[in-house]
Picture 1 (spheres, one colour):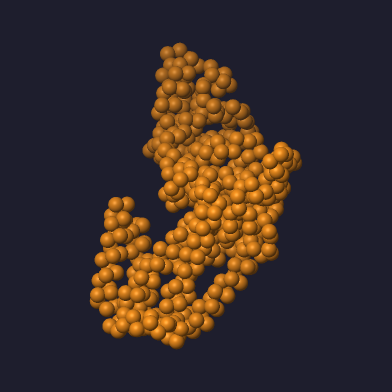
Picture 2 (cartoon, helix red, strand yellow):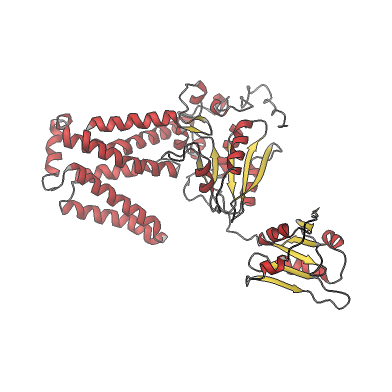
Length: 489
């Protein structure tokens, strides 16, 4: 509990708020003495807290200071600042006054805290390992993180963003591990946001990224508490936004888009197999359709003799050039996927499976595309979804379209020019000022748990790209781990 006072002229905040029909303002019924006047938003308050923890204590009139000590509600404020009164009432507080003309006002938190239960992550599901996912309530999300990291060094800095929404944003980091420059950069960029409403963490991440025009995500949006906890212990900075079930991890690297938390539940050998499989699948999705267009348009000599006849035979009845054939099929697959996402869950699943098969077979039988290209596009589509980071999958889905155009225009030269330009862009790209491609400059520690995952006993160092204050995760099994550095001044 805290007491605040302000000498500013008290505005008639009741008149300001009473225009809304869900605003409640009335006096309690007391037989002896003057009644209390209470004000709150009915749609923001919990009726259980109001009737069980507040109203029973308003039977006998006492001073607001004594009442603040008596009411068994954790958060209460005594103030006379009308701006603070309005702001807290909008956040679910109830205002109590002895008399409407009295400037002193007791604010009691009766906010409705009923949110959906913690469930499984929908975009980052895993067969084994922790299954708890974040929800829209920021305090619950921070609670999930603190249960995994019960340490006083876990610091939470709360900010307010959005002129109209006044959204609560929390910056989390581990004091003594996270680089202070990274923390200050994130806080400064969030404070510099000039936008009227913030509805999701994606708003914040897109506004504080180093290059907002890049197709590649320079932060990871996750709904998994274990991924956030792992990032904090490495020295990363986390951003949580009230109302969003996805938390933002900064800074990140290109290879982290291929790391799934499920990898740490398997043997390191099996985990490396799946990680290499994901990287290979992304390159297949990037190249396979453009290579088909380039080879079938300009480079027939690259096709083996035994494969040339089936390919030419499959396109015998197709009236379009390879470019139009591939573009039509890719757009059709994208529309089927997009429609499956927008439709209700059960209908969307049926459309994605049945619709894809029926439409694909009908297109082949109608002679609008070849069955070989249908297999290639289907393989590329499956490969694009192997990345555990959904935003990165969308990047690969989009970027293959300009590659297809270049392949139709310049053949294999266009495909490799696009690859070179993409590589140059990635080399110049940064995440919170740190290199996005962790392999440049080359660091041996990148091979501990990035390109491949070594056994836990060999993962001794935190990622050097983060410039952590604590470089070692542990020294060896015979010595105690290094203590955390002193707290920031």
